[in-house]
Length: 174
Image (tube, rainbow, N blue to C red; front, side, top):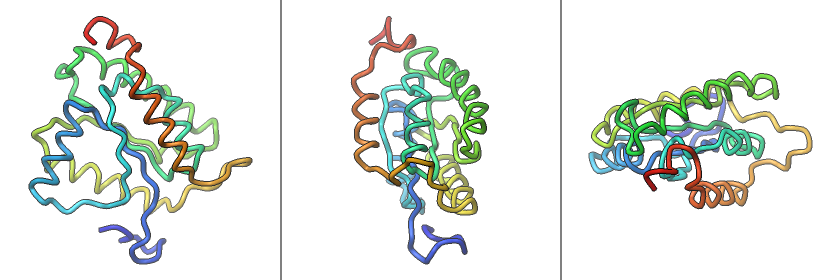
């Protein structure tokens, strides 16, 4: 599946970062894997406690650090393990989409969705269609002053996500 676009050499992956909710979307990705659904290999997963934990700056930083696309997936609304984390997330992500175009980043390089742990087929559809979209867009243009794709930056973002239980949706239930 990877490298299926005519824009890239056969077998060349793009750098797509996926922030997946521990309780639902990570389980949905696992369900797809257990069922052996064919999936693109471009996605680098960062497992998060809740989509509500994702600061939009994590997404912007990943894109500014050279990621070609960012996918966020969490529990369906009203099914959030933390009751309302995905409602916080949805508001933040809609604002982020408006902000991205101001920064010169194509908002099409960012997508958020909801996938439950039992929806392996839905996960496959989501990750495949988003990866195809990113392949059509091609590699992200280098930002001025940027050094290109930075794997260390992704590790720093993952560490920041894992230590941040202070977001509003986790204060009472963590």
